[in-house]
Length: 482
Image 1 (spheres, rainbow, N blue to C red):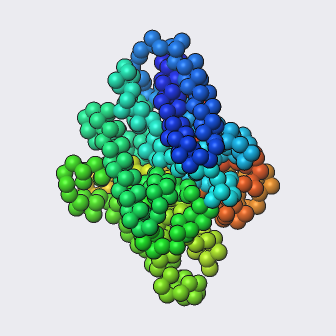
Image 2 (tube, rainbow, N blue to C red; image 1 turned 180 degrees about the vertical axis):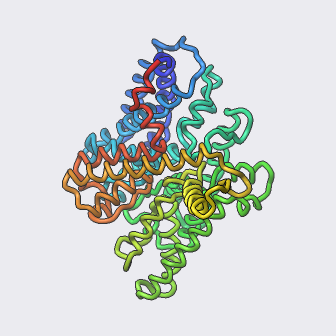
Image 3 (cartoon, rainbow, N blue to C red; image 1 turned 90 degrees about the vertical axis):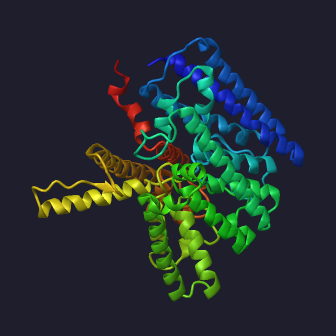
């Protein structure tokens, strides 16, 4: 492990991140909202800190190992979110305090979408844009973007890539060279963003709202430029466009890569993970529509519209809203919220435990049942036509057990701050799954949560974004031994 190399890379990445302050600064000048100086100050502080890390270690050249990748990913996401909170603390009389600004920044970069802000419609345009931009940058991962750039500066990237890409099958690459892989992912990501923006504009959004919502839709983030979220527009066309791009972004980007390279779509229906997600959403939508229709919650026209949107939004961990699903009848609020634990496909911008893990847990469970019936049988766990090694199946169960344990510990911690049980378990689940919406007292916003509870939720967001083990490994003594 080389501390100097790690500091050099962090310095480079911070200086790169400082450039993201330029677009909101230009937006501020364009709209004359008077807060461009907040971004200027934040940019100066970020650049200065990056230089302090980089200059003393600029000659440190060494190939990264896996251990270094863990440290850089965890440290950079933490440092990035802290520096990303600076504009939110500096933009004037309505600026956020330290806790709220860090919470909002982490929520944006981890694409969680939980907010402590009320009166979003009245925020300066540059701050509105900045929140959306945070989610877009976090959607694919700042580190993956950096992997496409840093090799030209003499830094190897495979260790970073394996740490950052979500899902249990992290050793697979889309192209032989990691730089080309990262570039391909970002080309696809940018293309989807532009297509989403144009579709929103065609459906009636102005360019500013279309740009902001395309950022958070493709990132499956959930931030909006309005308090009422997508419901502000009251447009079935906009809602269906949002549903379409949430679904696209919830599929693995490796599938999009194949579609782009081979010009075909049949592989979406052949992929077991994508197929499971589509069937899961179809079943959940059917249950939701039936329950809402039988309870006369909405008129016949609005039942399917609201049910489909909320199911896709919550289950893919986007968190946009056109209705307050926490007030829906029966077990629907709980059912939809639990669906977010499944999340999207591995290699997507969605949160949750990932569909592939749910499939493996189910198949592993069925294998154990079959072993009771046939004790001497050799039964392979298969996903599609591929046999899954026992090491991966065991890793999935390990992930699940640690996930449940951490969920319980953070739930107890949030409840210890005085939060009621429903609010506590839903906010912890929302943060850990990078969902955003919650139930109970946090159903509209997180602003009234105790300060300590917010810091626990910030840690939960980081765990969810880096899939738990990337962070937890840093707390093990064995990791730090030579």
